Length: 88
Image (cartoon, rainbow, N blue to C red; front, side):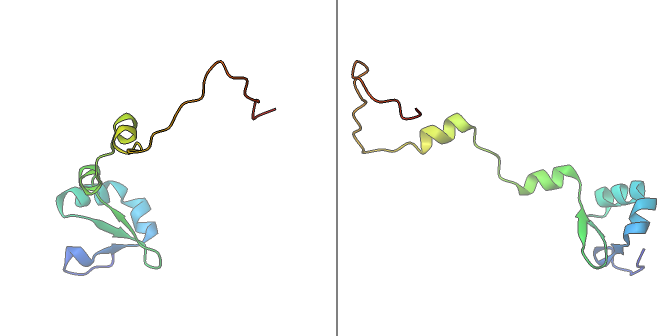
């Protein structure tokens, strides 16, 4: 581990992270996010922390109702009419 006194600046090398994954997971829960990598960094956080940062998904049915066009009068075609099949 790149030993620095402040846990928020701690950066694990990838090889250290491979060897000590259990410790990193425990520390992310106890001390906060753990950084892995020196060139390209990645952050390990508990799932509860990650889920709290994301907005809850709106169910598709509710989204369709909330976003349906309003104020447009569309006349559906007559079912008895002979329309050409558009996929032929």
